[in-house]
Length: 251
Image 1 (cartoon, helix red, strand yellow):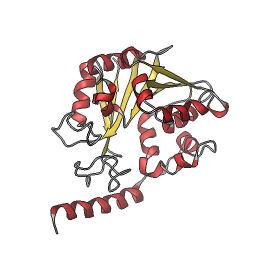
Image 2 (cartoon, rainbow, N blue to C red):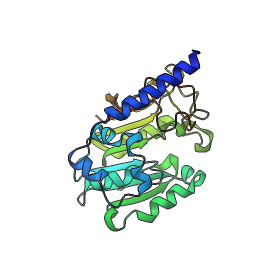
Image 3 (cartoon, rainbow, N blue to C red):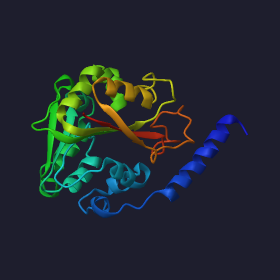
Image 4 (cartoon, rainbow, N blue to C red):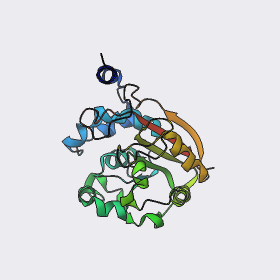
């Protein structure tokens, strides 16, 4: 068996194993995932995203102020809305550069934000170099988009300035969580554009350089059978990439 065929076989095995081993969400997370107002297209992603495990790590509580940074069409925005409840707030914060490059997801987000079941959601569209909030947040979350900040269509971003802005958004003790597709160790930011991946060590360096403290990582989204050579949207691996989830805290 060639090395490539062996890698694909191991990937298939790991995918099947991870599906069986996925934890069953409980409590408020289970209620959020079962939200009848969620679109069927969102529900269809839950198993591959392993959202229950990701939300458990995020540790969101009723009354929290949460920022869904670069929220796409609002997959996590809806879940955060349910978790923080009517006494909490969710800011769906979209950089203007991303809104220009991909307007359709923003339109889908704006269609439900601030209405009905999601009255606690507010959409903010701001230039990347001027991101700010009306009030301090308990959590800033970004999912599968941190790598995009390094790409030409985003400027690329001044990462030192960006991460300082994340720090300024948070109350003391607030957290910044980064979920993204993992690139091979040692590759840094060299595959953000072609493979849509980033080395978790590069994220740690950039975020801690802004003044954050690294406080932990979740291994529940990892896939050791992913050899990190395929693009995140390659049909052979889409939905099953090796993902990292890192937590940082504002002192």
